[in-house]
View 1 (spheres, rainbow over the protein chains, first blue to last red):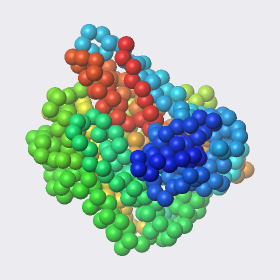
View 2: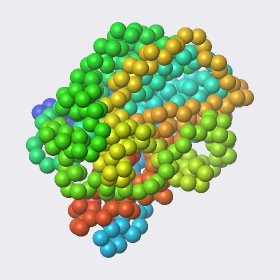
View 3: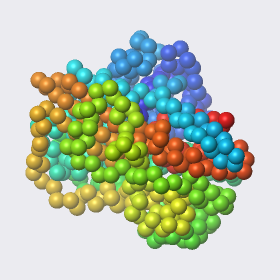
View 4: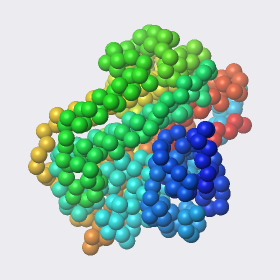
Length: 79
Length: 388
């Protein structure tokens, strides 16, 4: 199954087209090469190190709730 | 972030080759249980949220299975339009593998390529197939704008010709044997041409050659019967058909393509034929999408309601994707998904068999061949190769 994880953008390095995101308290650097018009605080779907697209807070919350229900992430609010 | 799952591939060396291949999957294959207890609309809305990498294919399979279980008719136009969006997503996925993954296997400077247009292609197509309405909601009806579709296909053709093929696609498709492909690869400057040239230059055309079988056409009735016997989920996690592992991929789909057929005859079912099959499929997808417009559409397709059971088989980027749903009182009682990666990366499947045939003089070459083969077969998750 092709899962991508919603994560919140913490910071953006525009020159490198990279961002730092956070999920479950873990920070990670991802590429923004495939998306446009994203800002700090936005949620994006991440797969194998790339942001695939921007999603709304509501979509992120719903997706994270479904993933928590399926037991693949810990329950909690999106960070 | 390991939430999306990953594959661990352990290669145990024996002499110059591989003695044993062990593929361990941490992919969450039982996640379809999540939909049990939800109604059809909720299920169809949730599928693309959870399976967002191939969201169009997953949504297409989910809505078709759910509509069949609920006895909702899908018009021919709607079925074709949904299939066109799934094909657009396959095009995008092939481009991502080529443009994001293949550069690591070739040397020389990289020219930055803007992939954002390709990323947006499936959604841009969806807008002109469903007049900006949701394509994968239950009971959706296509409202097709042929002129707008042709314009979007023309855009994507131009992009592919510039960034991937480096020449007119119709000209590239006339390259139907090793020599014609080699001539293109030697003179081409795109990342695709450089990778093919590198495989030929290293003499790795046959790497991974094996005779693993392709997944045959399976009737919905037979697939449904098999899934209904899969209470423990063994088939969904490690599928076999007639007790045999099978491949379902761009390579199996393009087996009849003249170039792929020729390469298999001259170089076996190794790296060159596999990588070329991905390019062959990518080359034909724009015109295959357009060809759906020519199919006579119209009225509602006769719909089979199998006592609350619905099954859909969709050709997704990485191979055949199956969704099965059982409804009772309009609520999901049973849901199963069989994804192509489970066939292709079965512990005894095509990836394991191909990797077991690798031979290379040194560890670095062996690792690179393994990574190329895995990339060609294309799991939808990250992977780690370990040599022992």
